[in-house]
Length: 208
Image: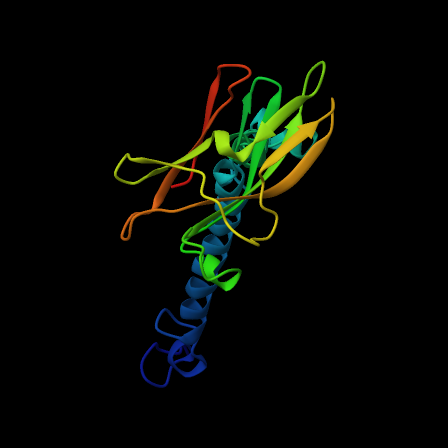
């Protein structure tokens, strides 16, 4: 007697029919396998993005430490010689005499040395003889210009330290001292002027 396919039949009872669990499991497994294969193909394709995004090193970058930085070289050689420029601004040569400014003090109270003194500016100098035969320097050949453009002669200063009346210098010799000047009240020194009577030349040092 043939068994039917009804509710009591083999297909319905065993679960192996079309509506049973086996076809669903098979279909799901097949889909998962296909997805895995597709993913593997995508990952293994040539021309990977990681390689494409990596920049090609330029010759300068590849050289590394073998090349110096041009910016550093330029900044290292562009430093001006401020010392030599400052020295030149604080000195002058007139004939065989070179004068170097050491200090300028204003106001300076000369009455501390003697009550009769009236000078109110002190200029500290070094005089140096350059050239054959040496030279002769006197502070009375100095004048001091103020901020109004008026010139003032060297002023006598009783018992003032290092008072430079005169220096007779042999070749290569030098001497230091101070010259004193009297400026009107409210004026400030602007320029030291030396007019050498022996050479007929003139030199100036800016004091501002």
